[in-house]
Length: 191
Ligand code: IMP
Image (cartoon, rainbow, N blue to C red; front, side, top):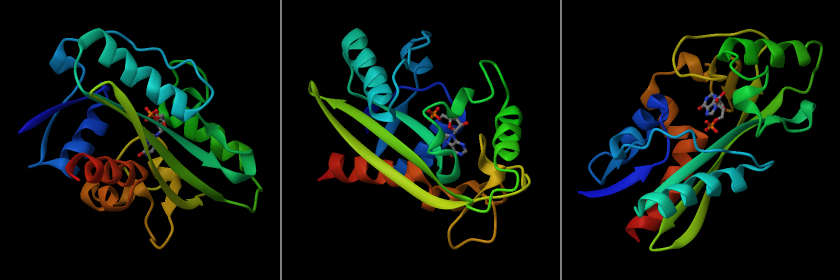
């Protein structure tokens, strides 16, 4: 099976992607290649941050690699938290702190439209290619469910009565932003 490095230490994301590509690729995480560095993501766009990570691994480890960057983009907040999704309530704050900040900012707001957007940067044979996945939905008024991670308890994807955190992982994986971006990545890799 062909090996590919996914430039992340996030066990949730590795599990999701392995579930989607199982049988086609062996996906290694940063720990599997002995990379313990915290790769900087200093930019203002998902595209630039994804490339910062993939190019870091490709240049320093000489291995084909992909990296993703994801943000929750809320219409009523002009696209925030966006690229700041991981640290919206501040550095070293929890998923709960971030959700509480979003819920407070949306208090009394009628426009609950939002999307998760993932950008994957693949570096293969020295060339970069990017793939985007988007899932639209509604910001809930309270947290529901315990599955998943991040903002899952307060995001309900279009066409479903459950929040992402109320869905089994394999259900979320069929429709998620990351699954869509990975689907495009896999289509490209196998074409
Ligand atoms: P990352 O850049 O992919 O690590 O994502 C940045 C932040 O977006 C994470 O720390 C989460 O707060 C949030 N996020 C990313 N993917 C998801 C998801 O599938 N569900 C909920 N929140 C997510």
